[in-house]
Length: 379
Image 1 (cartoon, rainbow, N blue to C red):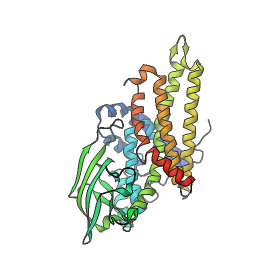
Image 2 (cartoon, rainbow, N blue to C red; image 1 turned 90 degrees about the vertical axis):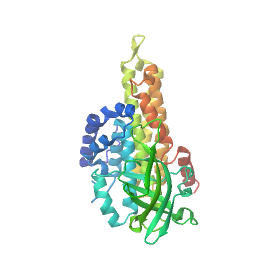
Image 3 (cartoon, helix red, strand yellow; image 1 turned 90 degrees about the horizontal axis):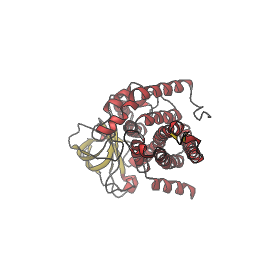
């Protein structure tokens, strides 16, 4: 098979090879237990910090400065080991990306070194119950009070929200300016008036919790990311990054399902012959292989554009849309190929199918991605 990651440097290959072994030894064996207990993946995140991965999205001097393609490969590796863990990891990336892209030098120096070392965990607080898929429709407000802001409102479905050490919170500072009236603030978990609510009881990613959050806080002006009104622009840049990472998550989970299906087809004997001897099964596996290859190529193109400093919103949306739809097809097909065994918790397929379902919803649903792609197409 052609090496789709041929552009990685020797150092990046060494990094991803080490990460692959680490995840196989330390992360994957805990995935089923995490799904059963529903405990947040604290231990897995602490373990990943040992590899340097917590800051892999950050450039020097805050992180290792690996390429966007190497980051894509790294996220895929973690996803193949445990969906809950990669969900918490990429939520952390959204928070640190926000500070990197929108923060002052002082905010970067205060938050990013500890975040990159895994000493602190971040959360990205954008989504609200009544804002739908349009972040510019948010109701959380930040109103001037002297040299501070009164941050007041609620967020929902916030990954890491109840356990994060810091949160990047998006709020309306000018209700008359639409998306240009949104600003972003870094909120420490100990800030008076910040109240984590309950963690949602989700279908999948049982160890990568999402929370309801309430805010009635006084936030110093120095905690604002960039000038007033630039928060929405920052959020859209961060979500472009995040959508490529979601594509990598989908590919990692789907690859695990495909590997299980391939092995099952070769070893499962029906009527004295392996399933893989049947044309219908062979075609099904071929379609899965094509799907995976296409998703990786789309994700790599988005990563290439990101690495080169090009505008990559369309490429990110294409990668996220295709990979999330692909992952559903592949995990469902792999479960189907296992028959009744795939539906039991003795096999990982039903967990993978549950974990991957959210991918078509968060970081912008498939419908929103189609709107973005159409807007570029019709421009």
